[in-house]
Amino acid sequence: MAKYTAMALKAGFIIMGCITSAAVIYTVVTDGLPFRKDLLTPWMTATLVDFYINVTVFAVWVCYKESSWIAAALWVILLVCFGSITTCLYITIQLFLLTAKESEDDPMYHILLRHQNRKDVGKRSSCQIITARIAFSVLGCLMSGVLLYTILTDGSPFRKDIITPWLTTTLIDFYINVAALSVWIGYKESSWIMAFIWIVLLICSGSIATCAYIVRYLLLLSPDDPLELVLLNSHHRAESRYEAASW
Image 1 (cartoon, rainbow, N blue to C red):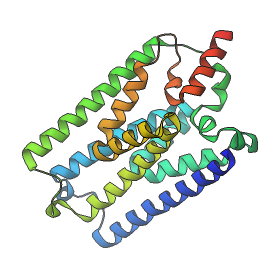
Image 2: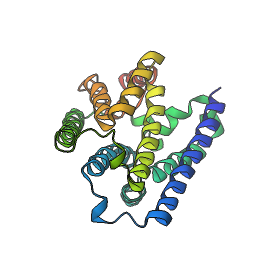
Image 3: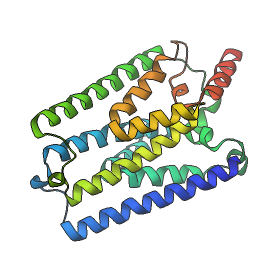
């Protein structure tokens, strides 16, 4: 079953990467480059803030995954420049790097954790956990403030007049990143009802829900837990805590 999950994930992320690439190319050809002041409407600006807060989540994960800071920096630059195209490419590469045993075992577990640190998950840092709680709480509050300000000054986003070709493409880019986050939530949640609720919240409130979700699980970590446990589901968190205690 896990083997088919890995195959489905590969196909899904390849397709999503192609969709975003096609959308960007089409918009560049039909509407020109995005580096224009006239595109920065209030709702476009709010969407970009929302988009880049989610990109920050992926950037933090990439920095954790990569053993080389040069490789991490290059991937983060690509994430900033190309958004979900890079997200899909990076995850697809990680899927293809899995061994046959890892694919048959639990592909999500092996993708999420850095390979070199699988046996070192027991390393603890309460400072990292506190810093992460503060950082994602601030990002969530920032997006809430931006959203509220934009509604008060520019009205509802559900209007035809604010839809531009580049806003549409940005939304496609944004929601493909949301799809990637939804896969992670589906893996983490033991209840399909809770997973569904969080995914709906992600779709409706974007990075506000992303930050709330991450902070929720950061608050469940004890000061003795390693920060990377936030990536794992309850089963693997329990296993990692047991292994850490054994060490």
